[in-house]
Image (cartoon, rainbow, N blue to C red; front, side):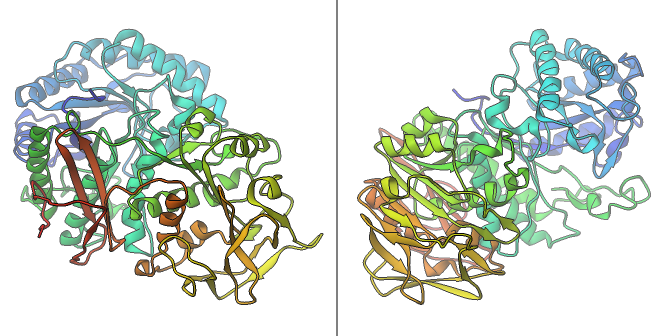
Length: 607
């Protein structure tokens, strides 16, 4: 049994269509009933709603009795319709504006006095709602770090610990999470396990490449899961139809919903239920896009995205009837993408700017390449050594360094090891670092970079030329990369390794031993950084070759890497989810030994 029942919570973030953020001030049970009826009709199972602090609390943490009565009435309305409610307990930030928090008038929610008053306020709400049948779980905040970012990880975790203890002490039955932005300390899975019951990223991603953009959503789900440490509930995602067309908006919503389901998310909550017509209300007057995020237009009519959600809800019911999540489960990940040690812990003289680049970005791209290759891959934090030991293939993507103890453990383990490394690229300078200290022992090479040198320089168009077969890549083939500025990397001299690929001067850039592969080209970082990528060139075949060396068999995959294939396995066979991550209509063979297939849900066709 997963975190919730049913296994996947299809939800929306909710403010009333006719009242927006003034829901509690302009209370209208009639208008709310119309909204909730429409939500139910679309097949939506849950709503995340918001306790605006200025409407509920006083400066001492006391609760407004009228607002509390309205809150209870709203929960009763949810129960009548069989919809689960997820109250967000502290709402200071909302839709591009910071609203008053009476018990933290300067928004310093980490101050001990403010924290004490905040716990008092939240506790009163929890005591009032904890026995409500419609209650699905507790979400601490709406992006608290945008109200005031913690000065340190310790300060943030102390706040989370205080609220978690208070909420769980009063209601040990319902799950609890933080509700913060994805780069917050409160969303760091290895650090918040034990304090929260799920991680709930809020993802509003932009990219120059549409296929890469689509693959980032499932990659983030795997990143936050940390190889199954915590369930992931995609608490917010969406776009405004004042930014993009309604038709493409619908395709985007559909893609993310299927991606979340395919990657084992506990659910996905779309931002948001409806558009708003109140143009003069703050913050909509100056945040125009916030008027148009809805599945439903301001007049109550359905956008194409609403129809996509309705169709997904029906397909979800079909799959659950077949046993998705019970009879059919995701296979265990045999491939681990290693997330660097400095992402979730501070080290002296290790640049914290590396958390995003090169830290997270190459990991996300490595996950995407794994998905394209049909590999069941997960993200694993570098310090989670037991998880690393369970993998047959470990991927260290585009690293500047790793812990000495990690390399030693990798050397002593039985897994196949792949690493790509570099010295400087795109604003990242790691000249006074070493990618590894086990060049010869682990990778079969000597570091041939000249003393004091920045490294081997590449610019413009770089071509990796294969001089021998490497899995599905044949000798003589080339992979092309567009460099957005100079790349500086290591020179290596093979000793116990075989040269697999070279640069334009026949210098080795990809070498392999029986149990390791080293690339001096940061493949993942380059693919993440290129404005546009020709995915049909087959970059994912590098990972297919690695899997072959590690004796990891891809289950099923599409010949076209723009289509992702995920499987759920059971005694009765497989449930296969194929997702077209492009905005084009595509046809592709399914590779991997499936003898027959029958369509049971979705929009595509099977021949």
